Amino acid sequence: MFVAVFGSVEQGIIYAIMALGVYLTFRVLDFPDLTVDGSFVTGGATAATMITLGYDPIIATLCAILAGFIAGSITGILHTKAKINALLAGILMMIALYSINLRIMGSTLENGIGRPNIPLSNATTLFTEISAFWKSLGIDDAINNMLRGIGFEQTPNTWGTVFFMVIVTFAIKFAADWFLKTESGLALRATGDNKKMIRSFSANTDTLIILGLGLSNALVALSGALIAQYSRFADVQAGVGMIVSGLASVIIGEAIFGTKSVMRTTLAVVCGAVIYRIVIALAMQIKIFDTGDLKLLTAVIVIIALVLPRVIDKRKEQKRKAKRKAEKLAMLAQAKKEGETIA
Image (cartoon, rainbow, N blue to C red; front, side, top):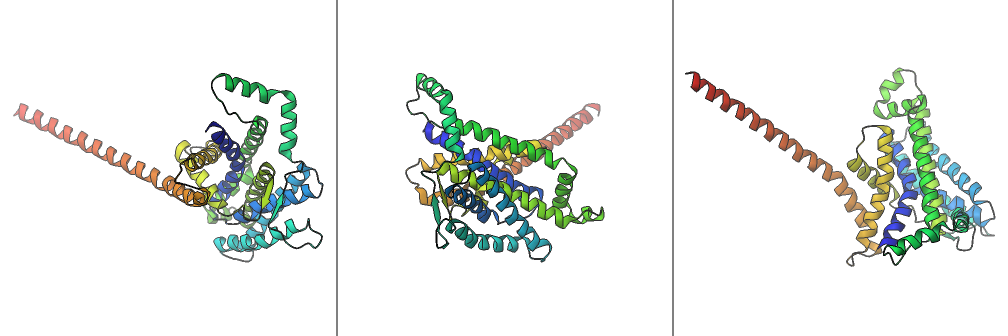
């Protein structure tokens, strides 16, 4: 159980980068961007292809980020310049990316024909290098020996991956906090809140939307590239339902931790991604579920996360109304009692 939960935390931290990207479009820009399902795979396909072709994993990951930025920017251009509905622009780009991703992965073959997946079992990735460095320090063994000493029989061997991803994810989180407080970031937030108002200040909302979508999908592609290297496998179907997972992370985080400030909201998104993965892992431990039920579980979790806060708020409001009513009745009773006493 501990190893399963630990693996969920490990994956959740990586998926948190994708959730931050979804947060930028759905919460900051108020843009329903379905490009995410395609750009996630684009990141993994680009990184896996370049690593297979012999490129350094860092360069491959940077190129994956660039590919995601381009995909998101094209969605923005379709919406702002071609005047295509936001939802439809994302769907069109997602469909186009399916074929593009097949072509990217097929570039490792001599005939260039699209292929649906790329294994990285024997390739050097970011995580193999990090694991090798971490093990050379002997920290993995020290942590696991301590855990065995307090009663844990099964212990993970990927502590280096977790610590590395915590540093990377929180660095991106703090960078997002800083950006959203800059002049461009404030303009981006204002565009999502009230596009007409920001246009009255001579701001170019089209450019801001394109920039926001580009940055969002760059983060999504980075998450896809890291997941491909973490799982040592890139697959064209890996992005199916990714937008729902991202939304679940955002909604769960906001419901638990609140949204009083930008810094608190981005932290909520990161924690929400980890909690979501833990909930999925614990649910899959129940024997009535199998791997085919994963999407159903995701949908149920999102529905609960959407409905539960409203139910709680409604009950709190009912209690407040009942309390105010009781106070008024008590005041009336007291006034009546005092009137009878005077009489």
